[in-house]
Amino acid sequence: MQTLTKSPAVQSRRVLFRIAAALLLGLAGGSPAFAQGSSVPVDQLMAGEALPDLALGKSDAPVTIVEYASMTCSHCAAFYAETFPTLKSKYIDTGKVRFILREFPLDPLATAGFMLARCAGDDKRNAIVDLLFLQQKNWAFTDKPVESLANLVKQTGMGQEAFETCLKNQDLYDKINKIRDHASEKFGVSATPTFFFNGQKQTGEISPEKLDQILEPLLKS
Image 1: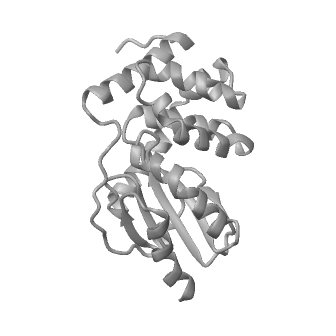
Image 2: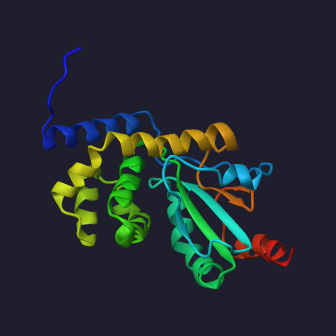
């Protein structure tokens, strides 16, 4: 097999090809199944992943929430816009909950979004996660999603060269997909968003009211 040395422009087209192929196969977005599953032992859930967890909150909080999400999942974006502010102010910031976001990309475009958050470093990682979920319709569902994504992350100070370098990182690409595959194989995750509340599985979008109903008994136990 012939191997070519690819320029940044060719690499960007390679990413775009992956994205286009996934969209043609109907993989982008994803439809969550709302049936609930069984519990997963917390020690298994918290065992080491391919990359450090994207975590917020005290490490010794009484409740740990692990969310598996896709950057191109509209239900994930809705949770982030409508429920996450309550989760953060009422539970994370008060030391009651530790929240962990784990990658479960449903298509290469979602993988690219998570890659950019990882490449941004600790000081800008959360800003990119916020931006990509809250502005999802302005990049994930446009005619030129890669170009839209590049323009959006420029708001956080990431230039074109850094953008292209990040998306050429095959090791990071593979590790993010490894997190997804591990969740699917070991924890039965098959849709986004999927949450684990101290190991108890909840699949599908969660409203602020539903969040309270789930968390209050756990905090009292």
